[in-house]
Image 1 (cartoon, helix red, strand yellow):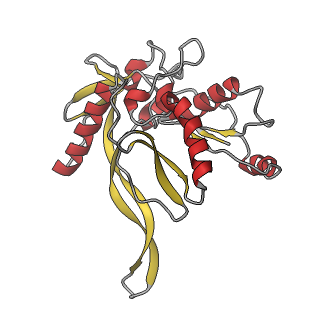
Image 2 (cartoon, one colour; image 1 turned 90 degrees about the vertical axis):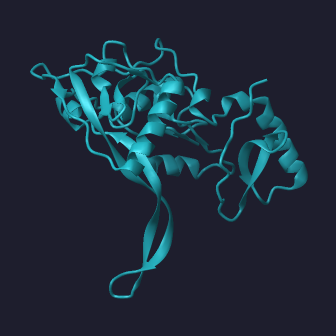
Image 3 (cartoon, one colour; image 1 turned 60 degrees about the vertical axis):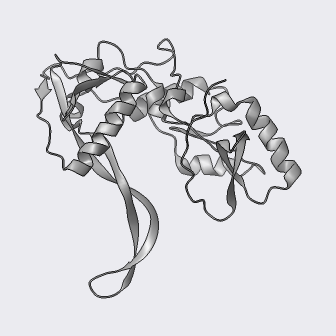
Length: 257
């Protein structure tokens, strides 16, 4: 039996509550707070059957087989490599980057590299939480999102500018909602760290190299920030669920209904 992961239990909106699939409040899931006891018990029995399909950390990501889906980075013919220097980070943001790099290394999603012709810098963007109300300079109450931390990102703008674009279409959300409206019951699933499920072709991994205060690293799995990543992911999901889409499943990127 695998060791239960440590999961931070965040406050939930009204109408939702936590339930647990394992002993001692382990393997939490979010359920409807209005469920009757027998309904909750029935739901938990089913969820426990498929507990290994639920992701709680990057270590839970098995990844898709390269024979099913692989991300490629095709460059325009005249494109040359681009090596950018690391950007300055204050101590707080350096710690954000350090934790993320260590987490990705431990999960085998990135690896150290020293000879790439494409090197992109990291930067950190605010991670926004819920909406609150604050006063502006005119003493007026206005809605504002609370910044709850920062997230490490890679600035792939130069690589994206040199990449041939993949024009695989995304579904029209309004049409999806119209089809969903015809059904009395719904189930919503979210693909955990969906992009990291898709491997990058070995020939293209060095193009994803990023630089930070702790070295240069390349991705084995598809990161956010690549211009063709959404198209690759949508194509993969459409292929997997092709016989179910518009019948019993609606799929938009890593959101399933």
